[in-house]
Amino acid sequence: MNNKTSLPQLLLEPSPDWKDYALLDSGGGKTLERFGPYVLIRPRPQAIWQPSLPKDAWNEAHAVLVEEKQEYGGRWNMLKPMEKAWEMRYRKLRFEAQLSSSRHVGVFPEQASHWDWLMGRIQNAGKKPFRLLNLFGYSGLATLAAASAGAEVTHVDSSKHAISWANYNMRLSGLEDKPVRWIAEDALKFVQREARRGNTYHGIVMDPPKFGRGSSGEVWDFFKRMPELLRACRAILANDADFIILTAYAITASAIVTRQAVEEIVGSAGQFECGELVTIEQSAGHILSHALFTRWNA
View (cartoon, rainbow, N blue to C red):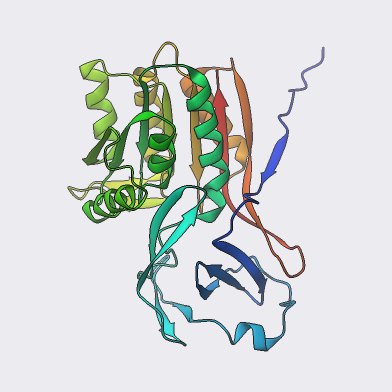
């Protein structure tokens, strides 16, 4: 008897079409990145090699993030004058980047491949309207992409600040007249309520954090809460659903885990892509992995 399991192919998925972002160099546990007009240095422990660019290039940075004890926390040391918030673009999308108390600046450039993919799926689906649910929507770039492609979007995030930021990005992109519903709530509670109401979606985008707190103090732990969220999502997936995107950051797991998580919702039918979202360094071609992902389409 042959008990071997057919193993899925894992992909390294870059986002090569950026003009306002570049990974200039990396090494010594840090990255040198350009976000629009500004160059930032951020910690990146996986960059265990030596930098390829000379010190003069790194000295051109406008700010460097100094990590503090709390996870993902830190403070920015300003090296050159710069605005705290500034505008960036990806294709026709416009949005605001800003320095914050975390290592993030409001955009995850490696996710641009997701935006391109979902825009193509929505435009080719032929569903009027195409209902998309964006869970853990943060600053709303997936929402912008989906709305620009013609979807009706429900954007959910427990942070009211993130909701305001995403709404502002919609206006920057000239999409303020698009049908977007903004929900400041715990993602699991919202999905469970949508199931009770009988509401369904053609597409679901999920970008859950490893750890977080909901709007009413609910604790989110990826490994403890994700199984329940997957069960809840199964109940709100439309019979003619088109796709699911699941991205996972900072967890100790393989991309196979995200694929099998999506299979909990849709079964084994349809097409799956799973792997890692990566950025390719300009200086020497080092590849930095940022997140695990699975994309499913019917």
